[in-house]
Structures are given as C-alpha cells and as structure tokens.
Image 1 (cartoon, rainbow over the protein chains, first blue to last red):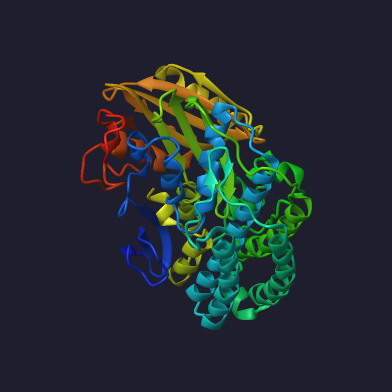
Image 2 (cartoon, rainbow over the protein chains, first blue to last red):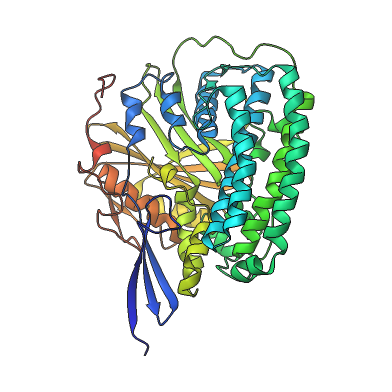
Length: 359
Length: 123
C-alpha cells in the first residue's frame, strides 16, 4: 500500500488572495482526499443587524464583498422591500440590473486574470485586468465608487444615470465586446491553457447538483441554475440566457464565464434600450415585519439573504449564504484524484471569494 | 415586486431526517441551512431546498441542549452548514461526516451568535 502523507495547502499561498486552508491527503503526487478549513477571518457581519437599523444595514450588507458588493446590497434591499410590500420604480429596477451586470463583468474579468496567473500566463492576466479597469471606471463615473458603490437603498436607488451617459456606456460596450472577444479566444483556444484545464478537476452533473454547487461551477457541469430567471430587478423584462457546458472540468467553468461576459454585455445593452423615464425611489415608512429568503445571481452563483423582522427598526436576523460556501463541498469532490500540481488551478476554478464566505 | 415562490414547513426534530429524505427523493437540491436565535434558549433552524426555483424550507425549533441529527448522509455537502451552526450558535449536531469539533470557524468568543441579543446598543 502506498504511504499517505498530508500536505497543507494555504491559508497563505501564491494563488490565494484570501485565506482558505486545505489538508491534502496524498499518495505519491495524487490527491486522494482534501479537508477544507475556513474561519481565519470570520467577521460576524450578520450580528451587526442587532446594532444597526434596517436602513443602515444596507451599507453593512454591501461590505460583505469587495467584488460583488452592489449585488449584496441589492439582494438585501429586495428582501426587505418584499417583506414591506414596497413597489420599486421601474427605472430603479433597470439601474439595479445595469450595475449588477457591470459587477458580473468586473468579477469575471478579475477571475480570468487570476486564473491565468494560476497557470503562469502573466500576459493574459494583465490583459484581462486592463479591460476590467475600464469597467471599474464606469462604476466610478456612475456611482462615485469603484469597490463599494453605495447606490442601492430600500425603495430604489440613490443615483440616476443620465440618458446621454447610458448611450455612451452602450457604445463603449461595443468596444469592450471586441476586446473581450480577443481575450477569450486565447483562454478557449490556446494549447497551453487547454493543457492545464481540460479534464482537470472534473465534477459530474449529479455531483454538482447534489453537492449544492451554484453559479458557473454548477453550469460548467451542465446544471442550468441561474437565479436571474426568477425575474428580480428588471431581469423579468429582459432575455436572460443560461450559459452551460457539460464537461464539468476547469475548462468548462472557464468557458461558461467567458460566454457570460458576452451575455452580460447584451443584458446591459438591452436594459439601456428599454429603461423608462421616471422616479428612482419611493419613500419608505414603517419597519419590516415578516421573513423572506431573497435569492439573486452573483457572479459566483446563487446568493441568499434571509431577512427576518419583528416590526421594529432592528431586524431579528440577517443570514447571508454566499456562493463560495456552497461550492466548497464540490471543490473537495473535484480535488479527489487530481495531481498535486493541478490543485491551484482547480481551487481557482470555483472562483473562491473568502471575503464573502467569512461574512 | 419579485415572485420567488417559497414555503416554510415547521416540523419536529424527530421528523427531520424523514422530511429531508423525502426532499432528496423528490430531486430537491440543498440551498442552505441557517439558524436564528428566537429566544433565551430557543433557535429556529431552516433547511432550504430548491427545485425549479421554488424554495421549500423545513423548520425545526430547538434549544442549545437538543441533539440535532446530521443530514450529511443524504446531502454530503451539508457539513459546511452544520459545522457553522455549531461554531456560531452552539447547536449540537450529531453524526456530521466531517466534524471539525468547533474549529471550522475560529472565533474569539465561543458561540458568538448564541448570546442574548441587546437590540440597538452600539457596537
């Protein structure tokens, strides 16, 4: 019998921007099991709901993550609005959709860069982040913030985008589409990328579904789950394609994210074309009394904000289930049987966001 | 307004395994397990399952002394939620497939979410 050894991977590792630890059980160079460990930077955000009023908690919810902060804030707001029966103006719904899709573009481009970095393709990393920089510029121009936008509030949004600016954004996205087309051709056709990602970290459809995988991790294994199909914000009025692939390896997860970049651009352009004139917020009175599980599609997958109020200005509970937490069991499954050298690529392929996970 | 259909079904702890098994057999996927402190020594635990974007929640109400059976036999990935529930709220979960025994989430205060709530007091 081959001797088994345990190699610790993380919490400090060149491919990990944030701390997660894996105990890799090895037989020679092959991983036979992986035991994950998180909790190095748990912040206990959810507890703050007892100390902050429900209107102030939007800022806390947004700070759960530095990449998809807008979607966290929006999901929390939608949940509270649902409990309080608040009808948000249509223009606000469209603006929320536009910023959500910019968040997806920003997140997927960031991930493509990190993924390229994980297999040592530095030039590709820099190209992905160059394009991402322009997406962040749009965030800054329209919200005033590159990381934390602060534009979502209960009852609508705080800022409008002028119609001329929306026109400019739509035109600029045509240019971005060409650049992303060039970039993704390398990710999807280059031999070195294929060599490091094809048949690596395979997750079957059944495993993905029963282990609770979400987002591109699930869709890369052929599980067509996309919460945008439930029609929150303005998604119900737009044509939302669900991008899937069936191979379930690192290449498939990369392919799904590459294609989702194009679908995000389409969604923003559709939203800009259809956005109506009108107010961007409504006055909110009272306090939430009830509970709701609000779900939205983050770049990494399904996000759940469970909100429970008792009619006072402080909520009873805010529970945030982030996509990375749900993807950890799938990651363990992907690692079983892989080569040690492939571990960084596989870990990166689920796009782990420990900041979200350690909310 | 959005239309995310969802239901909450309160059940006894003794019927949890049967309820979860039924969800598994009907093709539901596990979305999350979440705990809420609802009294001095009372906790609500919601087991959320999804099928075709319809959310079904099984709810049990327990005390910190209640032994809650693990559902990892049916949903292997549930260990992340069950360990989290133990580390943050002090819920005793019996039979977890990967039991971190309180080291999954390292906190300076033991069971920080299980302490009594003082609403509105500034942090």
